[in-house]
Image 1 (cartoon, rainbow, N blue to C red):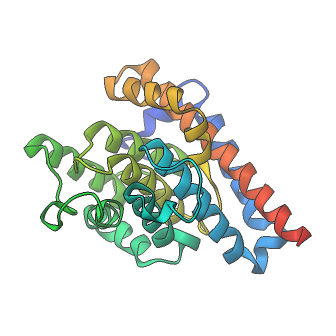
Image 2 (cartoon, rainbow, N blue to C red):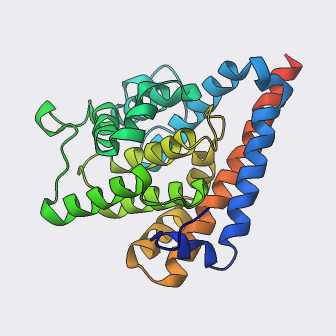
Length: 250
């Protein structure tokens, strides 16, 4: 139930958002129930993790193919570390997010940017008091300040982190990792089987424009961003079903 003083509750009143959110929930539930994922979910989660890392990396300028040379690319290496830390929903980052979201974000940045910046800049938000204030607001929402549907909250976290770019490096990988973390920690996709990152990569121009519109704060811009994110999560759930079906045939 969403309380009347929930600051994000009005988002579910935006055209199409509640319906899109429910479609995400239904499709991810199907993926989680798939016969392959009853016991074989770790294999599905590992494949989803690799696909998520590649797509997230490409959006930040990483290699378009995963081959022997990809591991040497600092953007891909960081995206892979983030994905592996969340793989299967079993990592300690999930619990850290639930009790101390800012610590979880710092850890995501350490993983994402370890090969991009010196150690003194890892996990340390930049941008001064305003960025710090908005990160605190986000943390308050994550620790009980909202009961809005998980797909919507994941989109808000994702969009806000892209807007703030709080670390000054690897912010895209961190934002997409944080969105993935929300879906896992909330139980929406507790095994991390969905791959919304692939849709964002394939629609990179639309993704970037929608992120800019979200940052602008208009009702239309926020609505478009939420629908884009929910659409990607829905497509990512269908990808999860495809991974499970391929596993069943092996």
